[in-house]
Image (cartoon, one colour):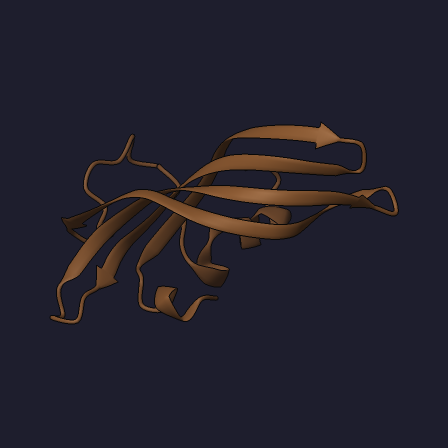
Length: 116
């Protein structure tokens, strides 16, 4: 885990649309992403929610039949910082299943349950 995320209460990272240009065994790609960190502590001891919009600019090569990223540049397009933390406010309904960091997340218990 990145050291900057150790004290963050919860995070989410979404890779959205990608534009890929293939030329034989090489390709270039631009992929948009949104990363959110909630309850990130500041130097002053406050907690903030951070959202970042960025793009991955990748060069890829097909090596032994598999596509590999050989170079990646991250371009930061925007960010937003708001006061807040990761407390639950409104939930869709009383029996909503909430995610958690680490082994308390429902993913780690799904294999032993008959239904999700």
